[in-house]
Length: 262
Image (tube, rainbow, N blue to C red):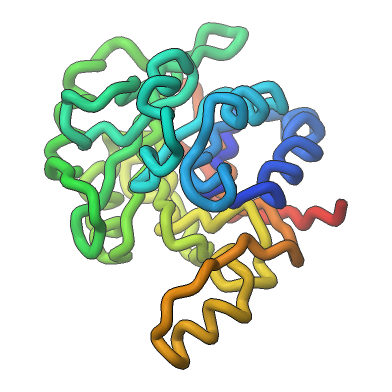
């Protein structure tokens, strides 16, 4: 059996601090073979930098994924190609820099294919069809992996659920991100595919999807633009914990949550 933990969007320094403090102990406690983390909000709540990516990888993550905020930080388009264990969404235009997939291997040689597709409903970036992109990558990588993790970074729950069923029996794990709110539907779909509509975030749940609640509420009341600093209280790691058999099929899928008090 193989154990895989996927953690949702890391938000700002509270999320990074929690990863840094807990990743190593979680690997031992849960006997993890793979730890994959979405890091697209790690830099002050928007985007990622090379320095922060190296920090998260050094803390114990095997790979980092990204989402629609991939290019929010200045110069990251130059930094991303130098990061061998970080991948951008696969259905962005092919001319954009960076890897669109990763293959990880554990000590036994078991290979995990990892890639992200962006949803197209209520999302800003220009992206190709996530369904057809997933088809293409799984076909291109056939025979080169033992299990496949497909992250669906999307706003619409219907789009994520549809992709889960579309990939059932072909991907080992289909897990959603982006809303920062964990869903209560972790399950194993037909054909042995672990699924959760949204893994939630690694960050401060005392705010509004990771941001300080006062200015967000004020914006809803008066409609005026203002800064939304990252919140600081009630920090948690959230994600999906999966057990895979030797054939790469999921035998269990559990919503994961761990509180962090610095």
